[in-house]
Amino acid sequence: MNKIKANNHYVPQLYLKRWVDSENEVCIYKTLVSHENENLWRKQSTAAIGYQRHLYTQMIAGKESDDLENWLDKNYESPAQEAISKAVNDEKLSKHDWYLLIRFLACQDVRTPARLLEHLSRQNRTQEKILQDSLERLKEEIENNSISPSDTVEPSNELDKLFPLKIRTERDPNDKEMARIKVESYTGRATWIHSLKHLLKYSEKVLHQHKWSII
Image (tube, rainbow, N blue to C red; front, side, top):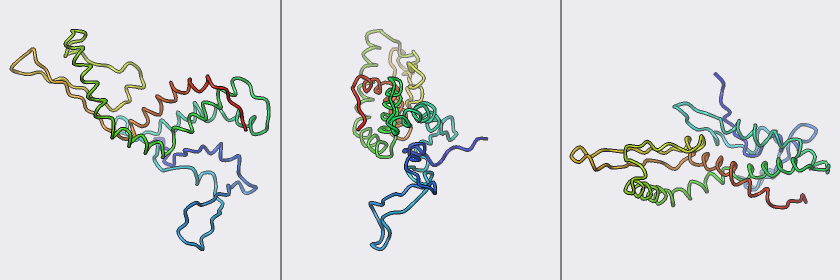
């Protein structure tokens, strides 16, 4: 059984390695210290910084999964490695290099612990209204005979299948024309990961329409 990656780097090690010294360590500055005599600067390996344990770990079919960690590496980190090297060494960048750098930038913006906290706060404020609006639209479709209460509502794509959402129809035993529709969801890591993947899959296209320069 493969062991999941528990130390999830929201700043990839391949990026941090650009700042390593002869001892293969990065010199970091502490903005918060526990004592006035503690050193503000210290050296650490790239494996020991820019990560949070189980940031991307989620439960899928009752098992812990680090699929997101591998997905980010395969689709955004590793493909951008050569383009990053060209940019650092002031080499000419092709159109495809820019494409990979923009994808890498978008990935870095949405994958951090701060973005997780922002998502949780936003969802706690808005999720109830979103679910209520969805129920109202579903009710209208049933009343307009667009769908039947017994129809199974399936996600439109593989990504949406991962969203933690359950829809149940309960028939009224005393009236066959009546039914109660229940929608259940929750705000958590799974909804953030779904949001993250959705942003990277669709919203990154907007970034490609802008003109970029490296300063």
